[in-house]
Amino acid sequence: MNAGRTVTAVALGLGVAVLTGIGANALARASEPLVVSITIHYSHFEPARITVPAGRPVTFVITNGDPIDHEWIVGDAASQRRHRTGTEPSHGERPTEISIPAGTERRTTVTFAATGSQLFTCHLPGHERYGMVGTITVN
Ligand SMILES: [Cu+2]
Image 1 (cartoon, rainbow, N blue to C red):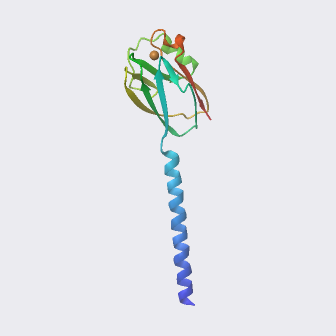
Image 2 (image 1 turned 45 degrees about the vertical axis):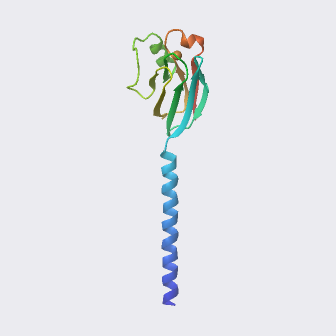
Image 3 (image 1 turned 30 degrees about the vertical axis):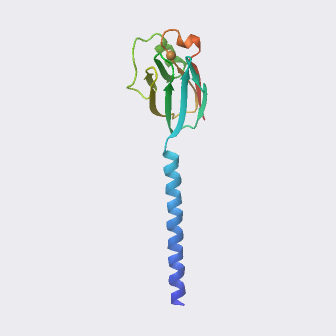
């Protein structure tokens, strides 16, 4: 009788340990960045429409296959307006403002706190007009 109780207690203990382990792993996976690859070719972003979850870090791997420099500037319409007339020649300090020199790859990790729509644009002269615009839907 005593032996039976001991076995039950051990089994219960193991069960709790396993459940706790699964919970911790699931939590770790949810906080690991999602990886989204963006290619730039002929002054266009591919893909130009991206959907990501709110509150989870997303690592953008941006590859510029063109022989000219580009930018990847993320923000709402007001922020894009500011950059359109901005004078910053290069970016790299903020995770949502990246310069990608010709033929290079850049990585940046962004966590979008709020749901909604964001634009990503290249604001080098003429590029936005030519079509270097994309959207990120955060849901
Ligand atoms: Cu560009």
